[in-house]
Length: 304
Image 1: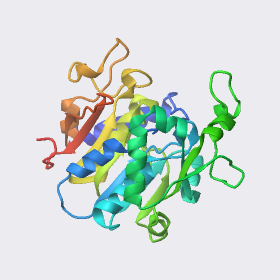
Image 2: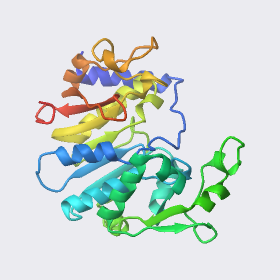
Image 3: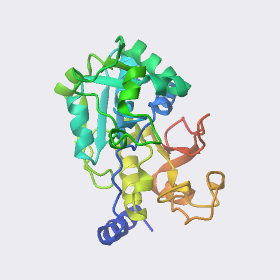
Image 4: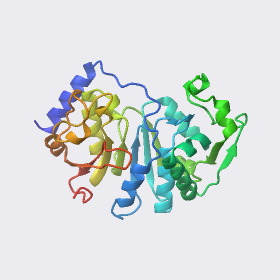
């Protein structure tokens, strides 16, 4: 089967599928550290053009997307602010939040209990060149919104007021972020990665983590094909297979047996299909998890 026939079948079956993506405002509670690690290992070919999909709103207890800003700060530090970044999410609330956000927030509790978040926060402050404040009231902080379940003051979790007593760390978004949005170097796209029309220019690196498991298998095929087509020769796509634990699996057994811990339904992406799409698959384990993979355009030296 050639790729055109394969895509036509995926489009047809996705159109009649009942497996609609779930709404999940916490699609990326990571701090962008995996993406930054890859960025730091890409060949020094000049300023990077990066695609980030599935931004989410949740970072522990507060509605505050982190990855777009930590990655933008790192790219700005790396390339002297001469970079491009496209941000994609299918939820209007997420796009609206990023387009209007002025400050970032994280609870003292989260920093104390999650050393990796504290490290990422310090790195962000340094690379963005911004200073933090610690606040104990939210009356004058319009961006400060706790996750919905927090507002219910569940007996199992501290209330928002208790987090405010401990303190909320806050800092400005990167100084150049809004300016780069105004001139088009940072673009916000509302859409499902399975069907959204991405810009014609090609990316050096694309990341789509904690998203694909929410799609049905046919939408997954369309999303992966869209991502692969969006990167230039030698480019990299970062994905993960959360479907090993929940939702829809991505990778087919036994090719990538190491990421499967149960007998749930199998995935579809294997080396043969990857070859048809023009990519090679490389596992990208981290200290935190072992479910990340790189899809490397065949001219890439990253997967050698």
